[in-house]
Amino acid sequence: MAMVANAYAHLGMLDAEMLVAFADEAARGMTAMQLPCATARQRTVVVADDGYDHIAVTQLLNVHARTRVFHPEFFAVSADWLSVQSYLITCTPQSLAIALHAFAKFLPDIKAQGTEPYSQLCSLFAVADKEITRRISKFSVQNLVNVLSAFSQLGIDDVACLPAALHCLLRQRNHWNTQDLANLASALVRLGHWDEVFFVALAEEAASDRLKTAFRFDERVTLLNGLSHFAKRHVHSNGWADTGNLLPPDVQPECSSSSSLLGDPVLLAFQSAEEQLSKAQIAKG
Image (cartoon, rainbow, N blue to C red; front, side, top):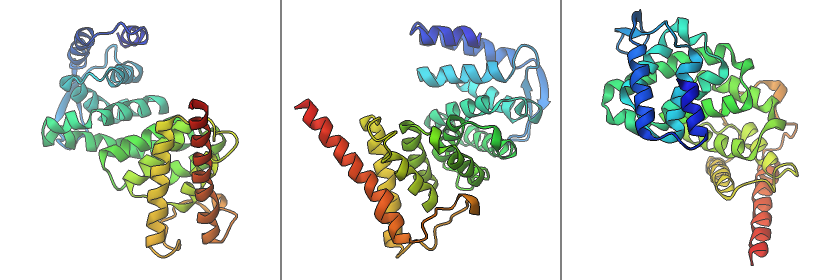
């Protein structure tokens, strides 16, 4: 069913009525047996063991996110399903990232349902946080970007997987793309995590020959906004000594001068953006 929904969505042929019918059926199907649930409600929840696995559940969540159709019952049952440890551990890194990303997209809708659904979602993210931390080395760049973006949108301050996620991302920075840079900068700002090593890495990649000409306008704006928040915070805090840096010693910057960290990569990122925007304007005109 999830595969069918995805196929129709790819073709642009999936309307809201069809998706709601799929979600209705999935919600009913996932109520075939009772299992203990690790949500804030600590209640017994009904979920299915028959015909539903992490692929079916997360792919159907993904279709809802792509089409912007919110189905309260299906999302509630899916949150309960994923909160069951025996199901959660079967999820691949991609499935986990897809699920959290989908839930975060509908945060306003979930909050509108009342405090209980939001508490249920926070509990799911707490359980997922532990599982992500345990398997962090298995997550790709895109998986980690989606995970951090989802946590930041939920407004959770204490994200256990954050230090390890940033560590893994830095080691794979040659795989970053322009969308990754923008989304990571935005996520770190929302999380209030002002790690100088990571922000400098974002700035360096933004000004690199590999990426500087590849930005969409909205991506560049988002990245520059994040870098400006970062730079302003450190200027106002009279230096870079207290940065909350959680990264291990082997991925620290070679440069030991805090002034040169701000004076080179961050400034170069803005200069590079100005240059590219000027070229685009000239080309238009």
